[in-house]
Image 1: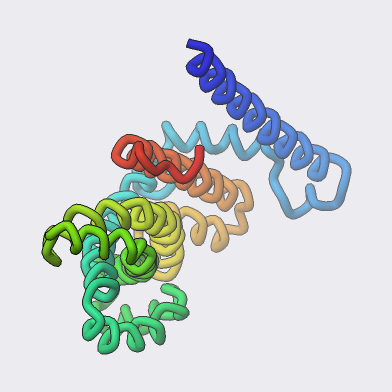
Image 2: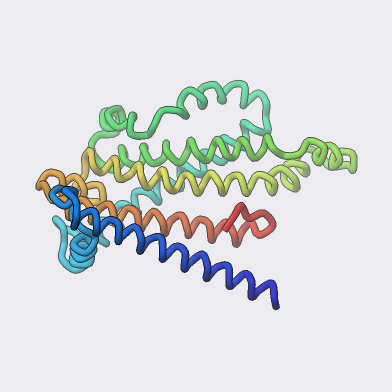
Length: 264
């Protein structure tokens, strides 16, 4: 009973601290706009939030702001799902089978430092200006993050634990399914949390290059019309959705990996 009370108190304390920090940020933003020359080139939080709520009812281009968000989320969902699946499989294979690691890891290490946006010109050449180029960029972004974490998860399994299991009569398949997979799942979720953030950032960058809808399109059209308010509306949408995605991934992790939660 006392433990549950302390857990709830801790959650409320974190929520209050988060609200205070956001309020302080908004106040600093408003004062900077009101009392410095930043107001000449930057819209204030009141104006931005007003425009954001207006965009919920009145479209920017052909869609309201939630319509643009749904377009971006749909692209992220497809690329993230395939990229995470491929990254999980490859990371586990490289971690468990040394020949696979020797063959594929050097190639992966060459590709991993390349940011997704560097592939935008080639993705347009390979897949055209349609949706496939965006899916490819999101796939690549998620794939790299998840592969590395899955590989690290397999390699971090205690070899003494696997040796003890083999001494008790477990074969390689049993060691893999009962020890290696459960041990690397928290690492995979860590990669998924990184991947969902990078995928969201990647789709915004891709939409800023060539798109007719999406949050990135909202920002680039605001730039074309010299509307800092519209640019900030897009930025606010990116921040809100990115935060929701991170919280959702953390909640899924907490439910599926109750034995090993990385943090609150």
